[in-house]
Length: 112
Image 1 (spheres, one colour):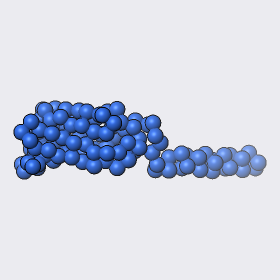
Image 2 (cartoon, helix red, strand yellow):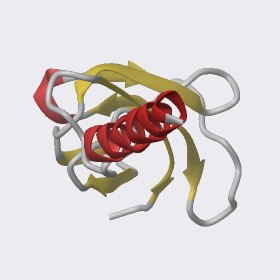
Image 3 (cartoon, helix red, strand yellow):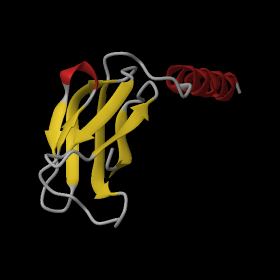
C-alpha cells in the first residue's frame, strides 16, 4: 500500500513539474525558426529571390517557390520580418516574442 501511495505522489510531482516547466512560456535561449512564403499581394503568386531580414540580424532569401527559412533566432526574440523586392515592393510581418520551435508566416509584397 505504501509503495502504491509513493508511486502516486511521485506521479503527481512529476506532472506538476512538467506543467510548471512547459507552462506555455518560452525560455530564452531555446531555438526559434521562422519559415514562410513570400507572395505578391495583388496576385497571390509566390515570389522567388526576395531578401528577407528579421530580428537580431537574421536574414534569408526566398527560393523558387517563394519559401524561406530564417534560423539563428531564439525564444523571446521579437521584432519584424521585412521582405524587399528589387522592383520596390515591400512587405512585413510583426513578430511577438517567439516561442521555441517553428513559426509559419506569409509575407505579402505590396507596391508602395
